[in-house]
Amino acid sequence: MSLALDAVTLTYPDGDGRLTALDAVSLTVPAGRMTAVVGPSGSGKSSLLAVAATLVTPDRGRVVVAGTDTAGLDAAGRAALRRSSIGIVFQQPNLLPSLTAVEQLQVMAHLSGRPPASVRDRAMELLDAVGLADRAGRRPHQLSGGQRQRVNIARALMNEPAVLLVDEPTSALDHERGEAVVALLAELTRARGTATVLVTHDRAHLASADETATVQDGHLTLPTPV
Ligand SMILES: Nc1ncnc2c1ncn2[C@@H]1O[C@H](COP(=O)(O)OP(=O)(O)OP(=O)(O)O)[C@@H](O)[C@H]1O
Image (cartoon, rainbow, N blue to C red; front, top):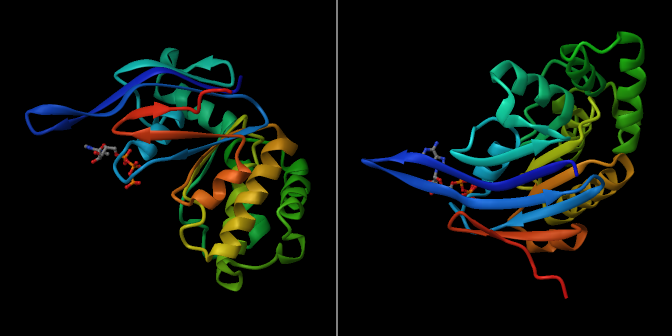
């Protein structure tokens, strides 16, 4: 079990009171599986990703990442866990303008203190996995939107994360390129054994996921097994 949220409640300050963004949310994503999360705007999807990413600490409940209960960690411990075990893909690729595709990936690995010798090989292997081996020397402005998002995904996988958290990865892409990116995420999830959470508003993406969770007013529901 690579990601487990157990009865997670998250509130934010709201005037004199508190707004409940997540209300006793439980979700388990095993290694090699992709769970899609859908729900209306403001329902709690980004909050769920932020809690799973250990960027926000819930009021109650447990978040277990790759076997580590994050409640026992201080800020430095959570940052170390993020570097070693969590890959995050945001809506916009946020690539560094001056770096080539392969360098975007290499920077990630150097930040985590990996031996440099293996870093370039792994970066090239991942660019190959996302279909960009022949674009390794290009800078972001020399890539299409879809290619930039592929670099972004490859970068998130650089440190072999157990958990991959993806927030609306296709919002800047047309339908066809969006479909291709989500199919790629599903393929990488299985091939690399990540526990992947994909927040999406596009129901066409649900076919690529192993399961779909719906968030509504901070409550998460999963389909009842038949
Ligand atoms: N930092 C914050 N402070 C106070 N309230 C917040 C904060 N972040 C989110 N909220 C509120 O928590 C609720 C859940 O927000 P969240 O961003 O998780 O929803 P979402 O489903 O991701 O929405 P969207 O699809 O529009 O991105 C909303 O009511 C939102 O207004």
